[in-house]
Image (cartoon, rainbow, N blue to C red; front, side, top):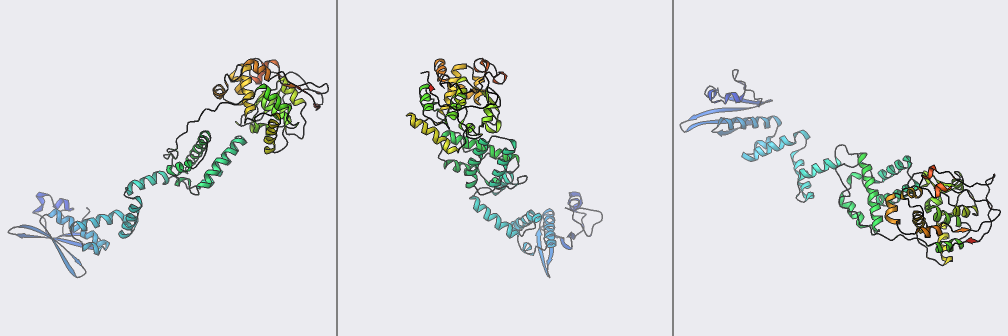
Length: 469
């Protein structure tokens, strides 16, 4: 207790005085001091027993408290001395349990230097907001999720940073555009700090998205990437799973649409001169529409016999080369060139030209069906999923799951025989050699056959479609 006894030299502490063997030897009054405040304990011996009287002054008025036990008297004297030294005059007027409660409350908030009524008011308001929940549990939750170590970062700023980081890492433009779209929708909904987000907010956000199961899952995957990025930068606690209430949806298997060889022949026959090479690249090389839109003629000519899809032009941000088949070589040879790009116009005009060719041919346009057709017929031709995965830029699992047994080898032979009739003054584009087109060797290892004119020029001439059907 660190209580000083004004009269005692032999006994240093109250505890020493209170030992049974020492009580009879204590000299009264005992003086308990705290700073300049002093409280005295007197002993009164009466026929009915011994009593201990605690006395102190408030101003000029003397106060007395009687106890039958020296321990209780000493504890009360120390409490009064502490209150007098702090100037807690109001507390001195309290009696019994109220006085003890007040003293404990003052001691509990002493380190924060706040008035007791302020603390009580804040506590009351907090409990009212929590609707009966524990204030301590709420404070612990806040400290764990938004307290020490968590930096405030607005959702919009965090979105900008992850997009910039992905661009610097060299991911594909397609991925960046997808990220901008999905995270753009997200940041428009939440104008707050990342650390302020809670699972219920995210669940309500997803409930408002009217998307197919696949798009819904893609959105969910994008946000998981974003939240993990925020956690690594300490904008969001690692203990928080904001997607815990957002379940992955079951994606319904949709049949893979492909064109028949006869449909493709009609499509090519009725297409404009500008869009014909684009149709051929999708049908006989399996290039995606986005890849065709970014493709230059130099990508076709740089590596004789192969089309080089650079990393920044591919969907997966991985460079790949695709062998040029003999019939594709003929379609590219008769193509008209209007600038460096395979398709020199806008994205919208590209898809309109594709659909216009289908309408003219009297067939139904099927989205992505040219690429699906290439993968299906190419798999039937070479019977090698891993090799086809390299050519198409897909995973073997996707190819095996969606394209197996969609076409027969005979149909594949017919598909890759569709070509324009050769013209005498047209130099074909170099084609991949037999190893690349037939054997199960790695495409990169194969050598291209064929050749071009010394100048590398290609002469465009109207020609009839050679239809093997």
